[in-house]
Image (cartoon, rainbow, N blue to C red):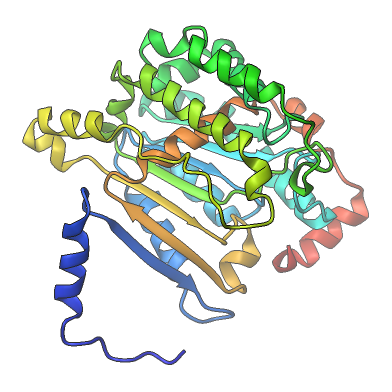
Length: 356
């Protein structure tokens, strides 16, 4: 595992690899070393949190939210005009329910909800947004129909979500006959008895940071999203329908995943004015690091940063989480989903904060 010098043809090999595919791929592996060693993930996230321009959109689902550093950075983003969506699990949907993690998550999210209320005029004046969503769902992982309904109902409930995403009205239309037929076929399959659905309560274990500049986010208003959404949901239905062949194994893998929206994205990009095209920024960070103090300071972590067009794909997946989340407007709503712990547990959680 020791570092070695790159081969003489390394650069030419990279160029040849990228030219073989239809798109230029940009990905970077970054790491946090254990203890007080190099922390590349921290630096990367801090750069993007503090330098994404006004009008950008950040969506950050994570299973552990308790770092005041990341919380403060995101408040600063909102005050600069960035639109920020924080998604954390409710107590019932948390994969790690240790009291320390839950105590500190509730406190950080309580502060974010409070700040979003108290500073709402200042945030709105800058064109920003700060919203906290609690992933609170009883839908099974493969219940595609339920997820589709949840997305529709959540967007109908919150006008600010419709305004933020700016979808064409066709996106909100009733499911197409193709989707309805696929859902009926899926419903005819035997009941799920796979390990990842054994307790019938989904857990939010995803750790993603999604970034899009204002110019990049405008692609969401294209009318083609109605058709792309249909393709996306049909693929998810196909994946759920083939779960019996993939559970616990890697081969055979159902060929249900394809790149969505390539032609639309290329057409949209070519039509942009050169100055706007230069300001199109997409980034997605996926990896092991949580939004907690321990992942930031002591743990070894790894992540993959993807840029260019590929990060548009996670955007579609994250719509699912947005729809299954309760977007809290008050601390009372928050505490109903993340109950207050005892005084002793709160004291222990603060005393050993780096352990959670």
